[in-house]
Image (cartoon, rainbow, N blue to C red; front, side, top):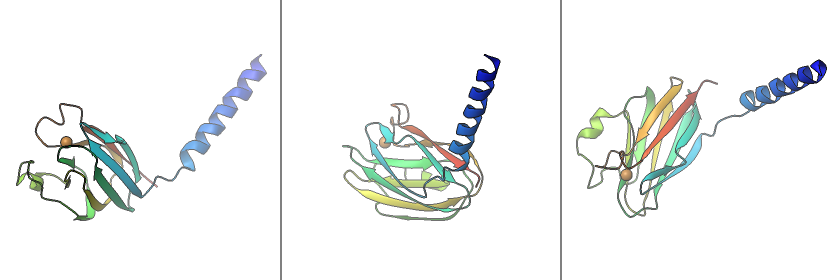
Length: 141
Ligand SMILES: [Cu+2]
């Protein structure tokens, strides 16, 4: 009985060690935005590695992808980065920010340097409260 428990404990330890150390997070990620979700809502990326994040908008309204505070380097964006409905000028307050028009695609490239968990929101009025939130998890390599 005792022996069985030890074997089980070792097996669990072994499996969990494999699961965490061998999984290399993706560096090219696509997130779809629609009413009112990010899909997937949780993204895991490695720290210190260039990330290419592609945002699509399959919804019927404009959406944006914002991480207000995160330490990032080499940020660049392509696509419809202005938008009509979000608060113009507010993007200066955000470390990561990109807008995607209805049916559009935009790309945000960056390198996150500090491991941690960061909140993702859509800043278009009413969308965050409707559930348009997510998590960006930066893990050390
Ligand atoms: Cu939105």
